[in-house]
Image (cartoon, rainbow over all chains, first blue to last red):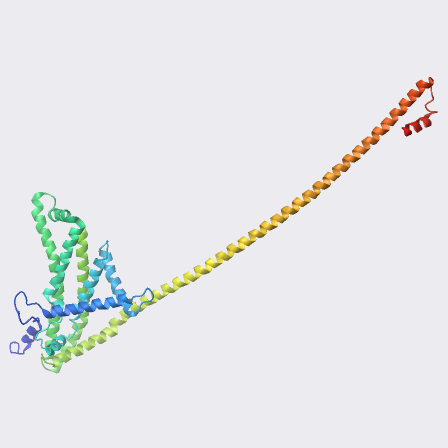
Length: 267
Length: 156
């Protein structure tokens, strides 16, 4: 059944195909409308949610909603405070946005893997991937933004001369012969950070989604036994995945803070 | 994409997942939220109480200061009274002393005058006798004429 039309392979392939504009299904302008749409909607939900709670915030006994937002805020701020000893007015909100946004995008993984594509099909959308963080474009978009921030804060903290001096003289030494190896190593180090950041999140989410799709295959495999096995497997993997999406959001947030804090440090 | 058994199975699993979240995950978050609310409420209550206590203490302090001031003025009044009393008594004493001294001096003056008079009288008597004896040119028996002389002296 693997190769026949409408079979399992096609099912998987269908699930792994992004929604692209009809006008340019390939090439540079083949943007993933589903990833962009879902991430924008989730970002808007996050902003609206926290903004509403912040607007109604009282100094007295908080409502449950406010207390929850405060708990999240305090948790993130505590993490930033542990890593970065400086002005947290930009890094704090950045970390909060990264944490909540990535968590919400990861959370799409927990929704039934066929639910959103099915709803989308009712609107005439043939393909729809609901988990933006299982899209390499999305995770790289975030990690390259972090790279830009790292470079920006390196310049800001050390000045152009200071940063250049550091790029060419650390970690081996000041001797002119060592300038090229120093620079090469620093570039590799600098570029490895966004790559590892993006690949880690993408890998976890993509694998998680794929496991959901594979288990979902059991539902249509036929037979009550396999169907029950599918139910159990899907549920167990879902429970396990709650942990994964939280940890991945946390790791992405912490590493973002660590990288930007490192950009502030002088060698 | 069709609605089929796969989607139903996923929905059932999702429902179980939600149930597990409600049962095992949400209570922890809820507990943290409620603890936070309780802590804030307690903190605010404690602050309120401390504020009220401070107010009480302030009122008590003001009361004590007022009392102390009153007491001090009472003490000053009493002292002034006492000083006046002492002054009055000293004045009375001084006047009495002056009177006494004056009386003593007057007594002395009187007794000295008396003594001087008597002495004068005696001397005048003696002089009179001497003079008389010179006049008479003869010895007068002082004993025989004593009564006469004494009478003379007394008249002087």
